[in-house]
Length: 318
Ligand SMILES: *[C@@H]1O[C@H](CO)[C@@H](O)[C@H](O)[C@H]1NC(C)=O
Image 1 (cartoon, rainbow, N blue to C red):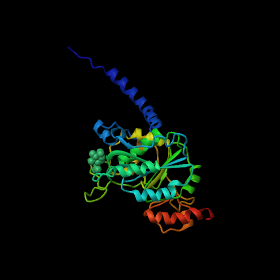
Image 2: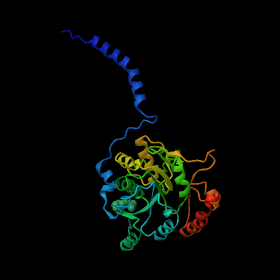
Image 3: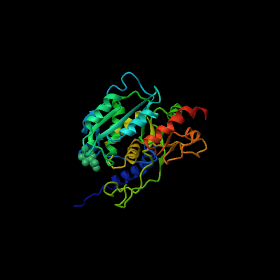
Image 4: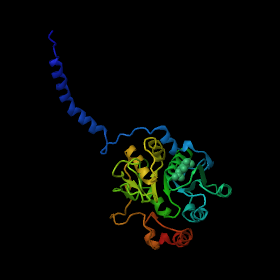
């Protein structure tokens, strides 16, 4: 018996495919961003490790934003034992005015228990939030997601947030001025690192195995010392973390979440591009040069207070 192979059908289908191809290309160009990236959901146990839902709040400030919507929430990760750093922040940029709200975020110390000291400090200042994960360098990614989740749920009407370390000089006066020019949504700015690569040397502090991070490059990300973002990103980054496996570099991690969201971090530079407004090196104090920067890195608590005494009085005459 002679089988009749459906050549006519094959011809028809190929012709249709040929015609459809350009259309498909056009459509994909239309819908995809410049940097196509298709995320997939994390396995449940990977997500459980980083999700704030997995941990218990030991200290909270649930009403910090009840009667007010701060323009800027300053989110400061600290270890429970960093009482001196918290004191310095409270005495300086942490209490710079009615438009800002400053909060400290801690985990629990791996060794000795400092719970009662922290409770006492929290009662006095009402500015500490603590969750029951182990407070360690590797767990800063968990802490970052805890801060994002806190802003998204406890302070949903804030306009902007800033993640900033406690050993940083923050020129809140200049920052509040700049915020008026920033987009209200989908915006994150700081010192952008575009050519970051994972260290493959196991001796490095920043070692990442290929299993942990298979790609050769990091997407652009803002240096974790201090970065500012429109508050809507707190919720969106929390959402994106459902697609991004934890790595122990919290700033790169935020960059990976931004890639999922299709949000590009913006480099904050002075008008001619000469000055990085988020200075991640440490610089010799000079009042009028600090007046034109948002952050400067590398301050011990006593130093910060000393510099602030001069700066807060003199910056407006620069
Ligand atoms: C991170 O926190 C989790 C939850 O508390 C803990 O099991 C884990 O040991 C911590 N990792 C490090 C490296 O401290």
